[in-house]
Image (tube, rainbow, N blue to C red; front, side, top):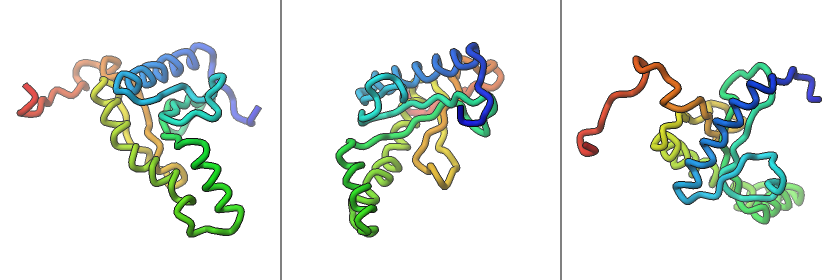
Length: 150
């Protein structure tokens, strides 16, 4: 246990259902996507959808991060441990994660899932997932239709 109270099974089921909606939306767009923590996902590249098991969260309980190929991540770690702090490999995973953030958000929004960038200096590439548009009361749902989309 990590010292935090765990959410109830009912709450976790709702979070995992939202995470699965995000995974499916990203897969429909052609991206490799999976729920982080499932068997066999430790070394997978692509959109890792994460569920926060804590009872209390300071932000969204579901998030998405882009994972580079494990070999690229290992090269970054190797460069760091060898003291090559300025090697291009060091910044590569974070740079790619930042470049993937906007497309991930756009895909999720196009699929009716409410997603925003995280405003966190420690995880600037993370995408926060809050729910689906259909979960919102009608009065709060976006109604704007861009002029060229009708």
